[in-house]
Length: 152
Image 1: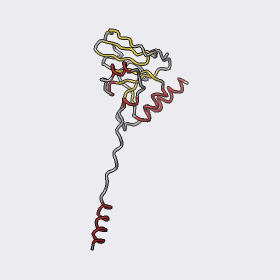
Image 2: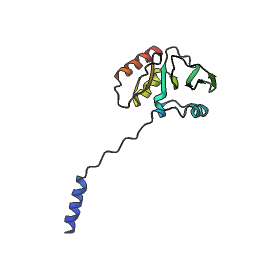
Image 3: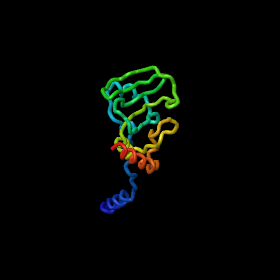
Image 4: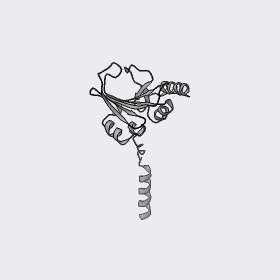
């Protein structure tokens, strides 16, 4: 009798459907390049939806990032120096944002892990933002590959 109950329990447990383990959620901000701690503190409040990634075929790599908000423009230079200036609102960046300059190859690595989409209304070409995680990647993938060829 004991064996029959044990077998019933085994059969019962085998029939329970176990939900698949949830994949760990990635924060898109974790995919961005690491910066000096002083800069990281300055931009820590900027949500992913306010991040813009800009690819330029003429990027000099002098300025790495820019933070635009509240009439201020903060620049992070490749040397780690941070410069803050008062800037009037302009047509290119009418809303607060963290603008990250990078190579197309770096943007491709981010795009492989979190979908990017073109950022409308920036006034600049080849500027992207984080999209919905499962959005169609095809058009942006092609655009980034073309930019990578131009930069090589």
